[in-house]
Length: 97
Image (cartoon, rainbow, N blue to C red):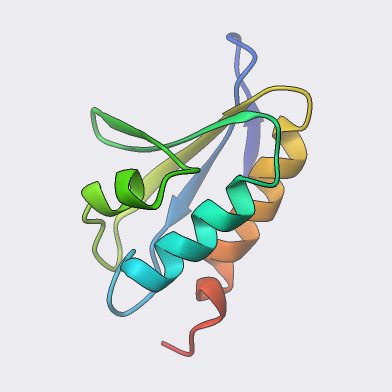
């Protein structure tokens, strides 16, 4: 669900549905898609917030299957960025499991 926040961030709650969690392949895909947008895009887990455009940053989350994350974006194309990246999570980054 896409939300608008007072600090001009757009956000959505996402769940890691991949069997192996947010491992190298989905992290690379997420970063690659995030880099297409001008907006600042963050992925948050608890009190940890990382740049969604950085594969290495994403991997530091070590997000397992079932992990709830917050996707946040701020900028001119923030809404489109959040929608696009949310769909990657919903579709398991194109992986079967």
